[in-house]
Length: 126
Image (cartoon, rainbow, N blue to C red):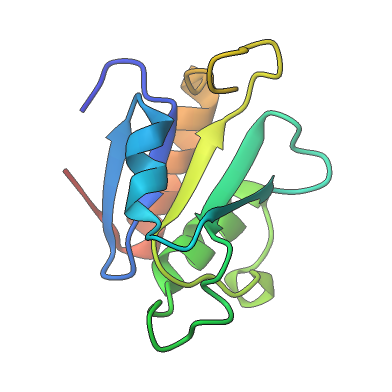
């Protein structure tokens, strides 16, 4: 684990990995490209990434209830209201001023909330 993670990658089996190079997380998404979105309309500092074909290629991308539970907890809404997630999912810190890869390290508060969410969801971390 890095001292200044910019993302947490959550796999469908509940394994979660902190990392500092978003390209590593994006490679885990699979060969079909990636889609990015905001965690919520109000969360301009946190983004989500998963395969942009995961919801269409259902045979290739397993459901990811762990990611759904983590995202719901971090966003502050019930897990039942979480959007469907499939395949590996990354939650990452966003900085529009970073011309290299648009990432930034999580704040201490974000990291604490994410760590709590991982525990609540039953994830294991490397």
